[in-house]
Each structure stands twice: as structure tokens, then as C-alpha cells.
Amino acid sequence: MIKNTFISFQEKKKKKAKGSVEFQVVSFTNKIRRLTSHLELHRKDYLSQRGLRKILGKRQRLLAYLSKKKKKEYVIKN
Image 1 (spheres, rainbow, N blue to C red):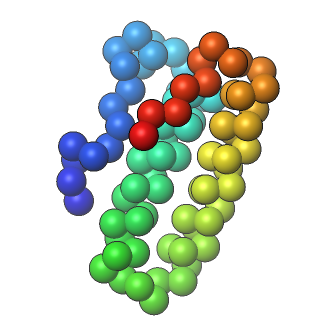
Image 2 (image 1 turned 135 degrees about the vertical axis):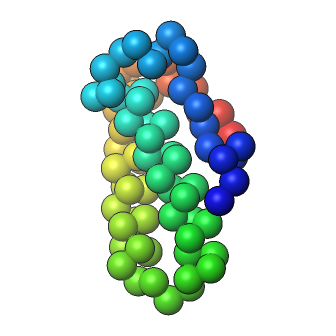
Image 3 (image 1 turned 60 degrees about the vertical axis):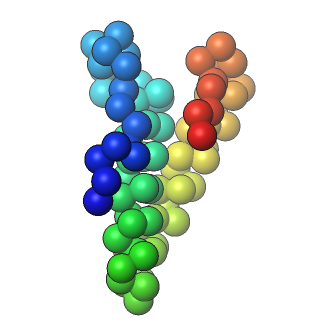
């Protein structure tokens, strides 16, 4: 696992509650990257594949919410 590929949350955002939508999106993105690297090694781990699909759906719904409600804070970094 490469730690440099995970997104680090900005210092000013760390002071916000962990329940904020932005923090959840970053957290889900880190989980997605970690599970993706795991699945590259273990291709037949179907439970992890299911978990990955669930997290992808949650993140997609949160990003849709951000794009509708908080347009200023909606920034996708690739």
C-alpha cells in the first residue's frame, strides 16, 4: 500500500466534525483506493468487491448531494 496516493485532509478542514460531508467523501475515497489495491492482489475476494461497490454508491450519493446543496465546496480532485 502506498501512503502517498491517499488524500490527506487539509488542516483547516480537520477541525470540522468527522461527520461532515466533505470528510466522509475523503474517507470513502481513501477506503476505495485501499480496497482497489487489495483487489488487485486478491481477485476472487467477492466480499471485498461487494464492500467496494457499497462504498462507491455511498460516495456517489454524497457527491450528488454536494453538487446540489453546496456548490462552492463541490470540487473533485483527480
